[in-house]
Length: 137
Image (cartoon, rainbow, N blue to C red; front, side, top):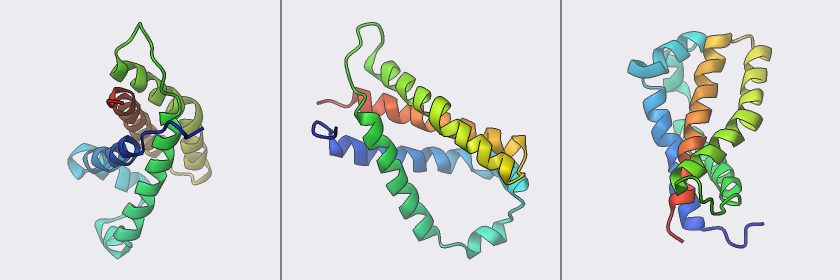
């Protein structure tokens, strides 16, 4: 399954989730609304082990990108970026987003929390797919 995987592309593309996350969860974008929806404060985030959080987040992104890279195949109708973005979007909409929404419901976090996290997932995996499919062989 991973015999033709371009691991350099996977490891570099996995950084996308962190870059998008830094923007997405910035207080000037969705960060303030997300923190309010979670009930967290800036003091709470200072108490967490950010090194561990970022490291494990990166590992999770590598797993997603490695799986997404197995879907690489040519398509004559779309540009490589758009084709990859489509696959990334499909992966998130049909697999990840339902879990994000389920978790939000069980955690009683509300729809704002679910929509912020779900839309982050769709945007991130779409960009990752676009990058992976556009990466030179």
